[in-house]
Length: 616
Ligand code: CA
Image 1 (spheres, rainbow, N blue to C red):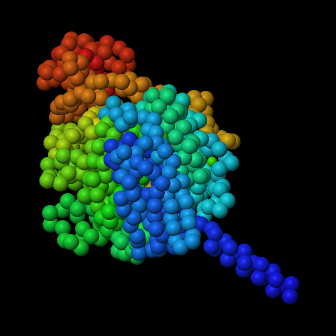
Image 2 (image 1 turned 180 degrees about the horizontal axis):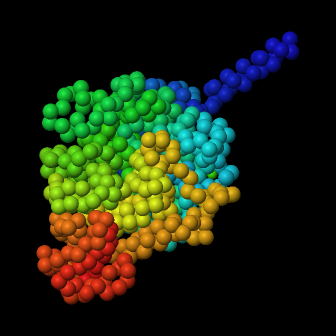
Image 3 (image 1 turned 180 degrees about the vertical axis):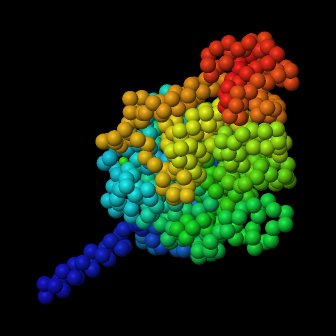
């Protein structure tokens, strides 16, 4: 009797809730937007149990609800609005299903920055790449977030999370500024609520949310603001090709065509050269581009217009919300060419000075060049992607400073030979140049390589004075070493001193070895010198074929120039200066490396692996 009463009361309560309550809305993406954007269209994706049969209305007078699109899955509705007349406001989106009514407040904010105030990164910058989980743990209280799928920290396991976070980066902005970095690029910080391997960030489970183990959206916004205050830009990593398999958009996909191969795992061949290959079979192209990166990274179908708009808007939302200066787009050639082109254009239409670098991991300059904006090889198609990654030059740089240079091969001849082919690029000055990154062996592949001071110094001088936008991987300044053969986790070791109780604190001079301090000071000197140097940022490049193993090149802007002499041999070399007269306007010059005056007579002697960076 008592039991029946309780049950009846429970049913009554449930019934009441059913008739009077609203549908539970699990996601509103984006959660807010702005008035006054150049593109007046706004897509709002709503996710909630069985909402698709709702009648949708909005309370705003100056916003038009243009379209309400149902998906195969009744848990989604995609709304399109016209904001061309919109003023900042909070309006209501009302979903009506019979007696059930759901009201979603939606805010249109006032823009706080103008489009032209968002400055992109360029060849005047040096990017410093940080893997946030591995740099510094500024907030141990967020290491483990209860309820998230990977809720443990194990610094002894290279594939586990280590606890680094945004607070740790913010804590060390002065360190980076002192080193001379002008931009920081963070590996993805968006939520990666995956069962394992979530530390690297490349399996996004919510495009609009900073992973709580790294911090909050607001903390990221503050990080950007503080970096700007210290003269540094911020580049955010984004991934449009795939998401994490724990993403709600995959687990409960709006429609099967949100993902390639209708949402069922089909492995990519990784052979993206097929996109440019004039001989490629249709099979080869499809499996490369539509295949999945891994089973836990489902491949988004960017040809679906709702997917395209969702991704494009997410990038614009982050730019507008945080004021970031650039985006690094992961696995760029794996996504649909036309949609990615449309995306790059949409971003620069909104923010003319913004910059995007696409990860174009291809093994030749011909293939990489195809992906750069205005490439003749891609014409009449155009990627609209200003910056591409010079992976082939990375390969050459990783050999050039170890070998003896001859007139026809080896050593610095590699660099000369590669740069003679720059005509293939639409804009060589907009190439990202780097010695290594989070996916490759470190430039110091092992401790033995890290002990080769000349190699390190020549590589840095070349990297920071050749054409393009240099990028440095965190820890290079303290000679961190790692070989990809030992697994990706070890390429991303913790920066010593980033965790309480670390044995060494390499953020501080006193915690570094003599050798590390020498490496740090050398990089710092070059970076501080490069900062604001218009000759490097904007100057032309002219070079000479290596002779007697010495490579000579000039950077020139207006009537100012820099001439680099680099000896790529293990012997002292005395060279005749006659062939170089066209780049030697004076009889003396200042060598920035030694802060001394060099007299330029008939001949010049360079010590083995010696260099001069002469300023005119
Ligand atoms: Ca932490």
